[in-house]
Image 1 (cartoon, rainbow, N blue to C red):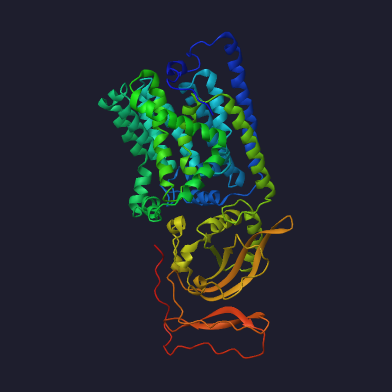
Image 2 (tube, rainbow, N blue to C red):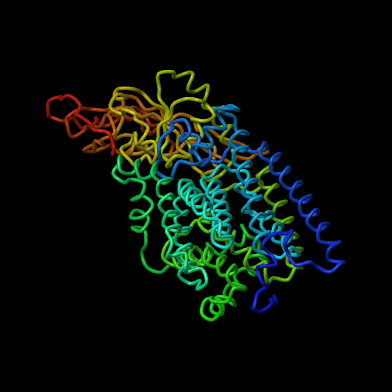
Length: 584
């Protein structure tokens, strides 16, 4: 792929479409048509995205952030609050329907696309604006955030608005836009913690740009940052009230997973960004960036014609280089780099050949057709709970089971996924791994008194994304259940089929006599007996806990007629249950 060389086009020609340098007559006739064609393509694509949002179940993340919205707060354990606030607003107006969650993401992302076009008008010559808009808006990245309500949705919107305001403030000299930029930068952080890179990019540009370094001698950049942190106060206050749990989770807890060099994680990041951005665009952006980096920063940062390209570079490089380097020691999630591509695409659009737009559109068409087939027909089952398939069917099968046991509470232990999905589709209270004394993420901060559940019975659902067999699990019930309930019995599994084949499987356990979130270790549990042919049935068996109490579990039993060996008994007198404390 060939690219033009710096110097780049003078940004004076790209300040806006009306004040741009006059093109030749032929260009003047073609440019509006190109822009009109781009808008028609994007109109059709966005309408298709909106309609497609009706065709598949909620992703676990969407159901989880809806759980956020049901419990309005200043912030939340995993993420800042802006996505939850947006979902609360939309569902309060239009109702708690899956399409409303999709409509929330679609509306905010549509505004992001308009914001990107505003940036293209201010940073690119008119002949390249439509190309940049198509390159950006036809990516799989925009399709994802148009359809799924993620924290990245408000992050991208307010990242774009922040850049628009900063451009007006720095290059246009409009001082009030410093204050608007500060507000947008704070709201960007309220969308996702990645928004802090806006402040890093601003500082980097003001230090590197000689003509605009003068702003550091005025109060405006500092007022901008101050207002940003005022807008970030809800996150600060929530963390201060909750032991800085969210900050620690996103920093120290993630850093604790680093364990030497793992180049495979870099390859995973490369693969995810190739899918999100599409190969021609990714190769083009990275090529232009590295070819221009040294020349732009070291030798041309003082030239007026290079200030806008330098601006774009400063809001791309920290995120891109930082997370790329981080991927060699830990897993970098696909969406962490999303904001960087806003200015990365604009920067590359100054230099990339226009035929790259056609190449990228061809890749986009193929990829979106493949995604549509997978989402609609699910020909390749995903061996993970991070899937859209089967959650509504799960809830439909759980509903009669829950109605048959109305006194049982429902819980799962896969982070938040099954619990959040059942909570949304059933409209009932569900619990997570905090029932078993584990970290429950946001479930730990809903104000539930787990000790009040002691003595209650429960239904436990255990997703098995890699198991497509129809039968029950073999062996004794999971030890984690036995430690927290007096009696555990495995019921028939819930099977979700796709065109006659099992695509999802959930084991189901009926758990009686909840003992509380503090685990209790059994002294010894008997191994089940087997007959000669290995056949098994079930029997109820006693195990003795350290406090002397006996509890019952349902375990497999041989089909022979030999009497079972009596369960071991404790000589310790019976005691009252220990005083359990809820998980932190």
